[in-house]
Length: 559
Image 1: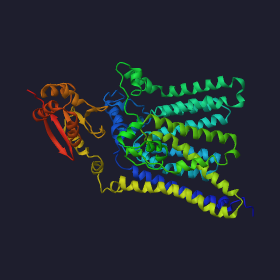
Image 2: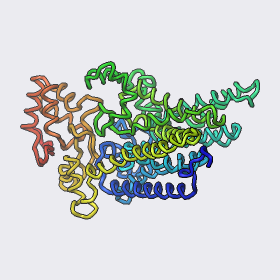
Image 3: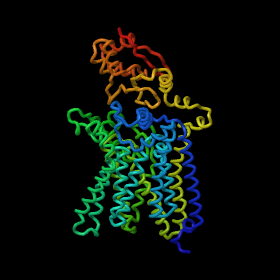
Image 4: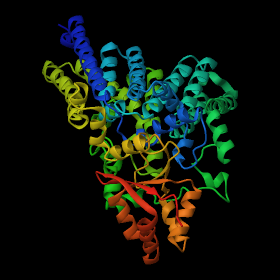
């Protein structure tokens, strides 16, 4: 028998068995995500933004400017899709829409790996991607990040087709269109645009087919790519420019509006890690490694999400035996690695690290991981030693199984966090479920059921979660500045405060008591506290209180 062959791995029977196992895992994974998704939305960004803004658009009858919501100026390709189920009164379907982009990204990875390796590795890549903790977490929430991942991955892989086709115009157009759709999904797509626009002339100029005019042609291709992507993104830029004079509001607002622009200045990411999280220089240096090991959901210090450590190890193996591969695969691997490293570097140096900020690098790392597993197999096949092969075969399965088990453990734990079964079997009502995760919900129900239709509520320390409120509302806190505090500070009498609030058409407050008391104690001076106390005593009446949240009415008469 030829010792360079591994009949255990190469036989059709084994391949069919592996495909069947992977298919079962894929189906179990999809069903698990669907079950976890089938509960009312309670995640923060869904209630502040991704569902709240479309709900306001439906109430208003179209897209309109919402000045008190800075995030309403963000691009909204996916959020507009959520309008459809919301119109029919369903706020769970948007989770499935979001999850569909994870499935589409898995399909992109599968298609690429099947073409470059084979179907087994492609299925491993798809299952690995879909089961990565942060992907699972996003798949069961109403966010837009999975759309950004899909569009950016499609743009990058279409760029590979552009290179493979000899720089066919068709593929660079498709790639630019998907890049523009990524931009229209989330502002993080600006990094994708920047990197891919640089990739285009760099790759084309290095091609021997382009001759002496290659550099000029390559620069032209890069400009064409960038402009076309911006054209696809332009409806959102035109909207924002019309409203604010800044096409990418609120980003870089002082650049577009030097006199009135909103400054984005704040603590740099390293100062935040030092001052807020009390981390050492060594801790900060190790962030690019820590992010793969220490992720925790809901904890900003630990990157507010969870990855799989094999996303760090396996991609390195993709460059093992690198010299023996075709030029096309070498180029694609280099681009996948360059995109991942450069994108990560932008996020690392520009903002406080969150795993959601580096999501577009996950599909490239998954693809490289599949190449890494393949290289281990190839090395074992050519080792020539039966002992190496006997040890190597179980080692391969252990690596893949362990990586998937880490993901499976996270999914299993999510059933304890989300608790969907009680809701699905009817033991827990919708209102009970939401109240368990969102303590302000009973107060909002009271507002919806008892306050007049023309009521306007000022949310005070509510975290901007307004989706479940059916009356008009405003946020008290804007970029760390309290509207109520500013009014009190610039008033001499409680009556003045009330008059200014009424001028804003405020009729009620919804207050989280513990945070409000803490804020007042640490930010109001004696005079301001006295005015606030007198105002609440004379002109404000509590009409509802539960679970630490109070609803207050401003008295109609202030005489």
